[in-house]
Image (cartoon, rainbow, N blue to C red; front, side, top):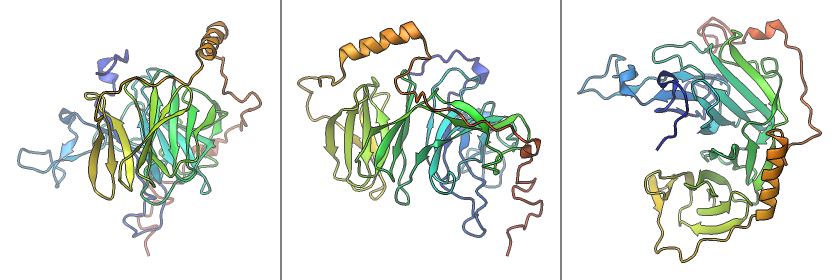
Length: 357
């Protein structure tokens, strides 16, 4: 089931999904990369006018149908992980977190995309959106083709990120951090030049290592009750179960596979599923017998009570994870920064053959 977001029916994003594109925009290796690439938003409702045939005409009963995108943003080429944020604060609910493996060309970075009001099928207007970069959240991609799992805990408001190249899982406070400055100077490839397109750098987000020493972590999934985090190890074929509250390792399952990717828990069966690249299979982890006794929590009940009491007394500003010594580095934006490097052609020139031989 899907909880009530409190949004107006014509503003709710139920039925939408986004994909990250691990692509530097080389046009099938026919041009130099222009890095004008990022996540794409789709609507699954066919009544939205978003399905066409091969000729680009409305899809008929005998046609092979293709989806038109509802929106796209261009600030995360080399995206190897993406997840929807179930927050209820924004007007349309189109917030996604992405693992941008290109980052600053040294380290990958965490990027938050809010598509806001999608432009809809057939349009290319990307002027209404908000994109936040978190350069202090450094990410390292793994071997080619390895997925970086991401999942948002809906009640704890924590974002879990698998970092394949570092063998870790990070936790980032989804509502933490602060605006530092515009991103247009340091990252001059962006979706739209208008001020309605907000592109910024955020700093001082609450970040910590949840698990380390993992063998190329890939897929992530939360249990139906949100109490356990499942982590797939791409390199070993093992799936590890951690307690969210304490970070303790509870169990390890050997799947016998050698290239595990994404994980997901079924909303219907509550069973864990995973995909394997080498065998091109979707698999389920099913119990062979009822569990004789639930695991005992490793978290301290007294400590959790103390945290709840402190939060009730001090309000939402209380945090055990915030770095009190972190201050944002603000820079007054230059008006010229609202002129993007890409012109109408999508390149740095209106010459459509600007990257031609």
